Amino acid sequence: MTQEWRVELPDEYAERYETGEHGTELVLWRPGITCWTSIYDQKEGETPAETLAWRKSKASKDAVQVFEFTDKPPLRFAYLLHETQEDAPPRWGLYTFTFGEGGHVMMSIYFDREEDLEPAKAIWLSITDKPR
Image 1 (cartoon, rainbow, N blue to C red):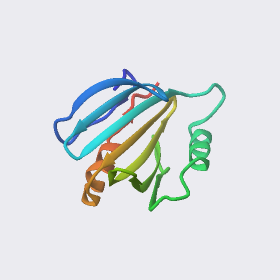
Image 2: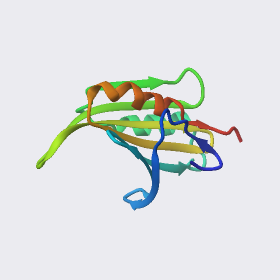
Image 3: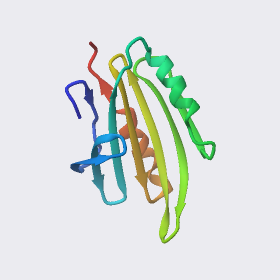
């Protein structure tokens, strides 16, 4: 993804870059799963744990499930939503955050079938940073 951040994909995915509300975003997709990725630098004087706490405070109250792994770096937090939109079929959204020393990755993973939660989690859990 960058010189600092890596992701391992379980299958072949197409990729493109788009300008979105969070700046330039990496989009990875294959039929049934789409990942929107934004990477942020660490704010000066802020620790990964502080950034994690801030992201947790902004999480949707409609989360169906919450995931948190803080026993070793990188720190991880995610929540799952079942989303419905007018004029569109329902979808699942796994909103993931991975926190390293130099910043964090926000990856929103959208999928059509509930059974694709495990592949979505595998993508998220494969995100790693290169130690500084």
